[in-house]
Length: 338
Image (cartoon, rainbow, N blue to C red; front, side, top):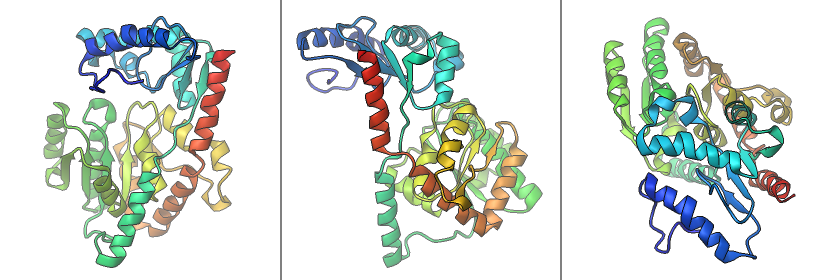
């Protein structure tokens, strides 16, 4: 259902609240008796609805980092959204880590929360194949760069822990003698200046790039020529960039936070892989830049390990599919209607 007749984006918090809490329920009442259930796949849902509501919770960032939200946005994210979620007939989440967070922070019973896994957008593989074919014709994607290049794909906020990548970059040069580059793709914020200051202090500013947001095809091109993707957030609801990178054969290094262990080190999924690929990607704790630098050093110097990580990623990402997601979502709908 569109937010309004002209399909105009919801521009601010009051606009969103008016749609979710007033206009959407009114539209549902006009649809009766044809409407049987409302699914809200993103953000809010009505507090009151003429039909059962199933709401999706991607993460609990506002409750984990409440200091980041204030004013009307603070009311929406920290007060209204949790109330909507608690009032819903059922909730869907992408993994067990988020389910446990909801049970702990919102006191929702486990039988009301259904895991509906995400899956990588197939367009990443399409773009990667197109670029590889173009490379064969034009040599447009070098197989190796003169200087190893690592990517981080994240908005510039403290939770994303980009500073750990910068510290590891400096340690990689100082302790292992390997000069490398780090490209930090994502929206720039006030925190960007903090990151630049850290890079200057560690004498690696010339080895960093902050290109801001980039189109998907350009991100794919940069991923394909990179040594690996570093994704070392302090908290995530899921973490899609590593799954997208794995789907096109790019090695990833992850922080060992709960959702990454649930999504990328699931024993049941790993057991479905060929025996030689039954392992999890390298992980590091969120404060250990030396361990991250050690992973980076091995990725640069051990081509066989890098190739094995590439094959693992393609195989592991293949255990996620739209069919499995649809089946899990249908089970959540049926439980809500029961």
